[in-house]
Amino acid sequence: MNGFSVAKTIRRGLETLAAISLLLMMLITFVDVTGRYFFNAPVVGSTELIEVLLAVMVFMAFPLVSWNEENICVDLLDNYFPKKWIGIRQIVINLICSCSLILVALMNWKLAGRSMEYEEVTEILEMPLGYVTYLISVTGFVGGVLTGFNALVYARKLFSGSTGADTIDTKSKEA
Image (cartoon, rainbow, N blue to C red; front, top):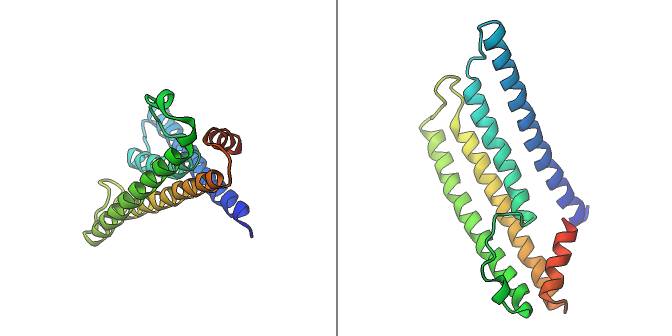
């Protein structure tokens, strides 16, 4: 299994889990509203289920956003930045983001452990919160690794002789 097929598998898995959680949120909301309106019987704990599924959906999509560099960015200095340094800028930005994501993931891992130790649960359904926090941590690690991978891609292109502008154009075509 080469690197491309592993990357494709990771991408498909994250996309599938995010889509399934969105579908479940829609189904739960539909059943809850229908039950509430027609039968005066809402789904018990539907709000908690929606909250947990929302976290799952957001944090499954989070590494994909980091990987594709689709984060919100402000390009105030792009017009003043020399084109020959664009590749170096992208490497530095991706490395900083990668380190930041991994640091946040480490902190979330500690919080998840503490949550499991204290047996924190949701109010109505008593679902353990530690598992959701572990999921957030794992996706943070994945996002950090994928962002680090972006830095390596930029470095490879920079040192293979292509310009920074070519790197950005190639990156957007690959996604």
